[in-house]
Image (cartoon, rainbow over all chains, first blue to last red; front, top):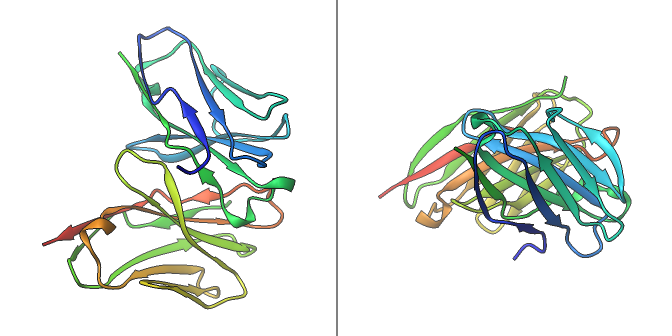
Length: 115
Length: 112
């Protein structure tokens, strides 16, 4: 157990639908990062939050949004889902001060299948 | 821009050494990492090295850094079936707000 909790582990939904993925960071970590992993694109950085504020944005589609709550858990919202959104979605966290210099701690991911 | 490149596949016989190579483009890279992803699991930090180091050894793992050539390698001695996984090279720098850039991963296949 890495200390980063992601729910649900698996999600199957239809095209056009909206889903919410949830992440609880490791205790004491203030930064949360979201990544998408697909077979052809590798690991794609989506977005980072630090202590409730958006800090960095990567290749995140406009149909996707995220937030970090006062208790530091984060949610990634995916809407108007397309078949190509099927992927593993990872959350990672890093220590106080947002210092990812010592690496991130990853959750075990949510596997999203859009049918 | 920042980029990390690594080969996608590597096959090694059980008991041999595995060497996974990686190149990166950002000359200001400060921290370099190797992550391991087993099937169905998240990425696990294996080891990291600061850019002022040339080598780091941790049991069966040896990391070599050639800063001039921007080349990082991970050597796994006495490769076992449990080492079968995807290995990600990654790097960050102090001026990048903690954003770590990952390579696409090298799938290590162990031959009996």
